[in-house]
Length: 343
Image (cartoon, rainbow, N blue to C red; front, top):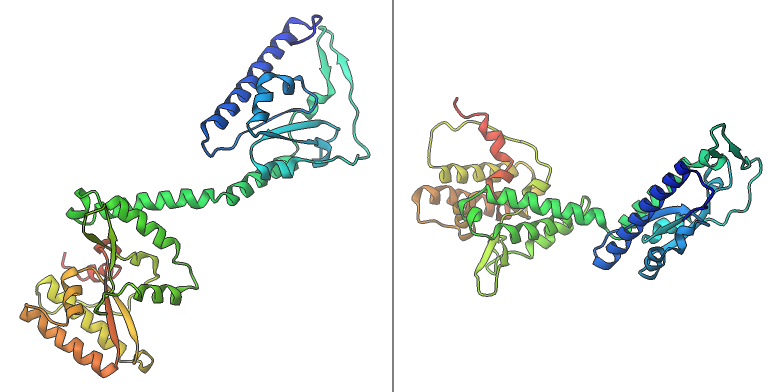
C-alpha cells in the first residue's frame, strides 16, 4: 500500500486513489452478480498493483477481461501503458493494441520539487488522448447496437406513449386495464411499418379482414378467458395531406355527417380511372359508421341514405372499400374540419 519513505501528502493521495479504485471494482463485481444487462469498465495502468487485489481477481473471474494498449497508439506524446477491465466485447476490441513502437516520443523524468514532493512526467499524460476517447465511445455504441439497446429503449418509450394516448381516448380504455397490453401490441406493430414497405404493410393489413371480408379489424386476446378487444389502427404513422375541406351547409347528427364525408372521399376517387377496379382502406374514427359500412346497411334511415350512394359509387368504380377504425386523436381529417367550426 505504498513505500515507507513517501511523504504524508503522497500517502494521502495514494489512499484516496486506492479507495476510488476499490469502490469501482466492488461496483463491477456487484453488477456481474446481479445479472442485470449493464456494462462496466475500469482503467488503470497496465503494471499497477491494483490488478493483484482480490477484488480485481474476482472481477476477472466473473467475466471482466482486460484490454491493454498505450496512449502513443492513440496520439499520446509518451508511451503510457493502460489496462481497461471491461465487460463489453466491442470496447475491448477497440482498445486492445499491440504497440509497434513510435518515433519522436517524449521520455519520463522524475523531478524533486523544492518542498520535497516528486513530480512525475507521466502525470502530463493523465488526460486520455482524444482518439482513445473516440475509440471507447465507438466501442460502446457498437456494443449498444449489437444488443439493440436503443431499439429496446425506443420501444419502451413508444409503449408508454401509446398507453397514455389510449387512456385519454375513451372511458372504456381509461379504466379497464387493457390499454397497457394494447400499447405493447401497437408499439411492436408500428416497428414493422417501415418506409418503402407500404405495399407489404397493406397486404398484411388485408389479412386482418373479418371472415366476411367486409372490414379490417385488429383484435387481441387479453387474459385467458377474456373476450377479444379491438385495437385502433395507428393512422398517425402515415403522412397525410388535406384534399378537401369545407363547411356543412346544415347541421346533422355526427354519425350522419361522418358518413357523408365518406361519400365525398368515394366520389373524389371517381376522378381518376387508375383507382377503379381496386380494393382500398378507409380509416374512420366512428365505430358506428365503420360497422354500417361493413354491413352495408343500418337501422337508421339517415345513415341508410348515404350507404346507398356508397354502394352505387362502389359498383360504378368496381372498387371495394375496407373501413378501418382508429381513435379520434389519430384521425388527421378532424384537424382540417375544425377550422370551419363556428367560434
